[in-house]
Length: 259
Ligand code: FES
Image (cartoon, rainbow, N blue to C red; front, side, top):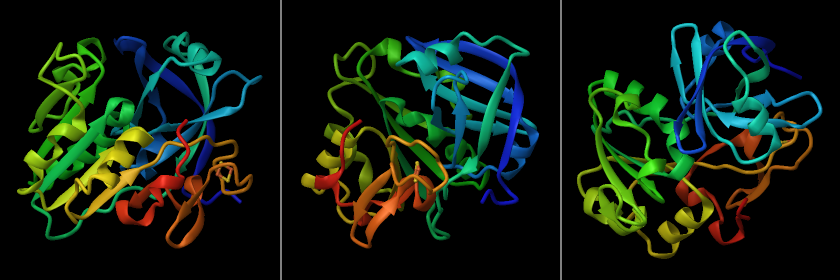
């Protein structure tokens, strides 16, 4: 059953622009979802009626407007990238649980690996508005896959890390994490499964409280099909319903399947 907070509707596109190589920022006029959305939640987006819906993180909310940041990786997102202003997109959301900020946390460290930056900016902006200090490690393969500064919230302190050294520090985001952990009261991370597994195997978090957002395959997005099940210390969980945000220690990282 769809809760009262969840809307299923067709919403007009305001703009849809390529902001990094193969990555698009789409703004939609979606007042019901924007009003109910919490950082870390996601929406199910119908990418052409012949294809399954795609789970996409809520990237940002600004009054009645909602943004998604997505990579063109297949037929569905290719279709999405071709939509122009005033096209209508069928959306269900907001879905999932969202991040929880610890009341005592003053210095917040964000770890954004690749497209993992997508759900973190909405939270970063919220946290900055609460007067917290925010450092964000932004990892990407190369400079053309780094989100331009002008699209980051004002007040954020970004640290850019690229695999090939074409921008910022050279290396993997996990190579630099420990330098920034000591001053952090709480960590929020989003990135691919190998990044999380490296964090786990090398104990990079040193027991700092950390919440992560998981990206897994989803079909229904509503806790019905069990297609998004993962193994946790509390047993099997549905990412669309119980997540996508988990405490880092909850997830059995060796059992998580890469997508
Ligand atoms: Fe169907 Fe999660 S996507 S149960």
